Length: 55
Image 1 (spheres, helix red, strand yellow):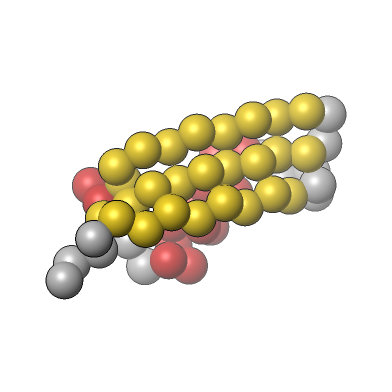
Image 2 (cartoon, rainbow, N blue to C red):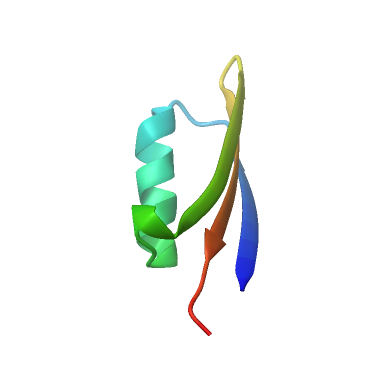
């Protein structure tokens, strides 16, 4: 099953740190990521992450 999550942040946290926090909090591995997209505008960052979960 594929799940999708969107997250947005207006903090000054680095984009890659935000991605790692998201992955850690979801309890997934990089191998489970199916698709990934991000956008950055000034201080706002948006991340869309699709990941596969075991049935």
